[in-house]
Length: 510
Image (tube, helix red, strand yellow):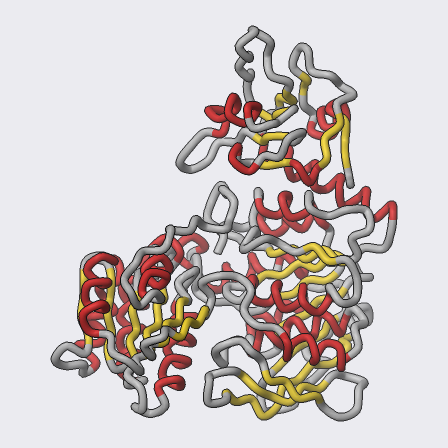
């Protein structure tokens, strides 16, 4: 357990204790929550302003649920007896969370060895995190984010789950603006920085894909010379980040050509450590990636047959392998773990085989043009050249800016080129997919546009047949993951709608 007194919390966060608050009151950081419904007795409630609600409105509920202290930005109400609730008043509750999280990391480093791994990229962060957690948990006590905790709120909440004996702390880092990853890195001071890829997610906010690369590269630039950068050699923008690193480099690659270990290592203090390489990359009949994995300095290769779905997971598998290798985990242990792990986080190529022979693939947690095309390729491969009818139920890709219509149009055209049997486009924001499919050469009812998920469900309930494979893919905000959950039930009963497993961030952080 890591705990701080109320007085220490106030000192660390430059806050002020409210009248009557016991300065000696101690708070276990694992009991800090931003949702009054998630509080455990004896915990601290963080009252922050969110996009849809103000946490200060739930202070009374938080204390009724067992909170003993609040971290708030303004005066707190009194209880029924007129006594103010105990609180630390700060200028910015979210920044105060970050300061407290930094103190937790420092406390652990003072106590024992700790490796902090930061992971960023336009896609694949959560899957890579899950894989790496599976590997490292066999080597030492490992803490990783719940779901996709990856922003100004999620990173501190992940840190608060660590204890003094934590050996590995895995942190996802998302960004929607410049400087955000630098801020997160300053909280946790990562020993290893992993960059998966640079795509067009958030292009509307950053202005260009090159700006996205600059933002993702903040993780590499934050590494100390004693750390290590783990970079995707196959992505030119990521490979170029080696020039921003004072730390040595480990690359990972699935390219046919041998990746040059020295690529991008332009100074004496930036020696590269070689490349973790996948060769013979393929998918089996069930759509699971397979390849031969080699490690620098280790003779021979190791056979990987993953339980994940889709060729695009090769980069995630390699990133986890390269990171674990950089941390000293034996190649055989890495490979054994990769071969044993299936999907962990929900709505990421999540496969359900219904009893009536329909296969549902729910990949609607997040979407950008790159991940859309990857999911469609996987669907086409599973269709087996027409042996099974394939359905792509696609919704809007958010935050693409001025390129939104073009990118949606191109996805519709890709669906036609891949010979997807049926394209069902859901929602006005995604309509350009349907238009693109029609312009590319779709005819009849191969492509259909419907205004909302209810209309899409009606089509699917009426027309899905045994042997069909149906893919659901959209950005989180489009909500198609809930439709996918419903269609996964052949009887038509509606499951309880799940909530996002991401905490209330100031901005969405896919």
